[in-house]
Length: 436
Ligand code: GAP
Image (tube, rainbow, N blue to C red):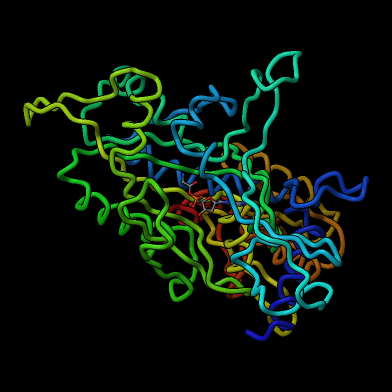
């Protein structure tokens, strides 16, 4: 896609996201805080649905994955053991002329500065650690430094034995977690694609060392399958295998799941074979025994870990982009019904003859099960358009015929086709069409 078209499309999505209440700039009334975002009424529902769908497939539908919710602040030794204190760095360069900052691997330093256009103005690269630091307790000295976690994974490793013992799991089994992570990115951007505060949905699957490759293949396939449940366009998803230069220090093998964003193919999820690196290092740094005795094999070993790691905010952005559709007369967000923020809208055709009361009764009946929206203002066509832009899959209208024979029209967002069904069939109809 040409750069201009790309920018225009992203601009339209950012503007729709704000107008409809999906995503706002953080602290906007103060001029905004760079790369931090807030979710509005529709955004929080979309995000919640994405998280629930992930949790359902990773935890509820299986017997071999347990959940945790670890704290964001952890013992500083955790980040020494994980390698983040030493190695979680990006090479940073500055333009001496315009003072812009870049990741060295993202600019061609033999060319002019992409911001001011001057040549030979770049400084030498310096290593910049991406972890946010803060202090625990009243004294701001080096002995009290703690970090905002840059990934949720470490809270899983440190709880490996706690969870295993409490849940009486045997290998192979996994631990899943959804939570905030923080990275002081040098070049955040593309709306919520790369931010400094974001949520991750990570799962570490602990296996015996001789079964790592089998489970790696299993999780690769399983995770790609999940994106179909999310409703993403299949042809816009692909695997990218990490070459030897891309592999993280802990990884034996890694594949990204990439999506074709308007700005480029980019990673949404990483699947990594982390070997016994993490538990091995935590055993060394904590001096605790983190090995596992395999009764079946009659062997003791440090488990290998297959990790699936996905950014929740990045996935929400992907869903917004994938759903965004411009048609001749309307803009519509064609979310999979399972993740749509509002499941149905109910309209009385006019505000008289008992139609509003009928609509409220129907809404009250649906409310316990679904997020539904009531709208009585403006022409019905306009109300449909408003729901199309919010991605609401079904609009139910109460009209004269409803009052005569207890039937309503139900309109499909994508086809715009309407069918008439009995009002007591609305709930089963939604149940049938919203299941996933
Ligand atoms: N525990 C492994 C790990 O954190 P990662 O590839 O650095 O691996 C995993 O991150 C996922 O987290 C990415 O695929 C991406 O979706 C998300 N992510 C990483 N950095 C992000 C950022 N600055 N903003 C938004 N999402 C981010």
